[in-house]
Length: 296
Image (cartoon, rainbow, N blue to C red; front, side):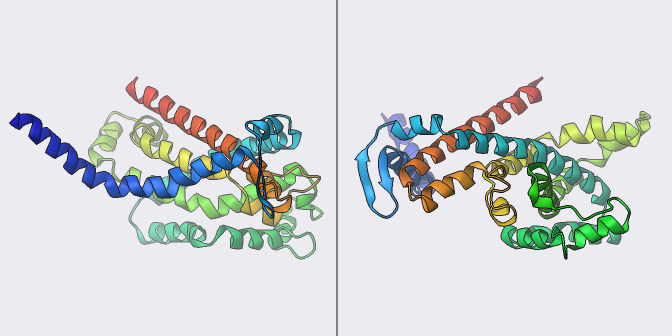
């Protein structure tokens, strides 16, 4: 009896400790998501409010919406291209600056500096840098002889995506570098010195020692890089505005267009639920694969 009373008090004490976190998650995450699912079941106009119940009608409409799937495919392509770029460049920058010399500290500061700039501000900056008439980026490419004529960056889907990738890489790569520097500096020197004694070269030590020991950080960075890429909006809204011919509209851009330009909040909510489900599935799969590889 006394043992059961002790377990009950311990359970109640534990519940009180985690209650603030549970309340926070419930208010900030679960309630808005439940409201989103509820809204997706109705014909909900932004100006007129809640309308008739549609059940899964908005989801059926999403299934038949060709532009939604085109936008989703473009978003996936953007994510699959930019995530490895950010990962590789961030890791290489970390390898170059993981020491503690003054020049390495200074280089880390310079590479990290764009991270503190807002995404909207950096997008506007690069929009003007890519301008055909006055853009300094085109002038730089012409001065070094890489191109003869200034290209129009946002008149073609691939060029527009490349321009956005360059701007986002400039802004985000410093974040990955800092994460990887912290992970690399936590590796005991004894391990890398043992590799040197065994005759392993620099890149052999990187591939066989540093990369496996920093795998949790690599996984974390892939997730925190891929999820925002799947939710990309600001950079495309500012730099391409969905053009040319709606070819650079991302999933969130299409949700925004339906919800706040066409006033179809119910349909926009259904699209949001579908996107959240996809991101949750991809993130879960990524974590499971990483854990499976870690146990091998």
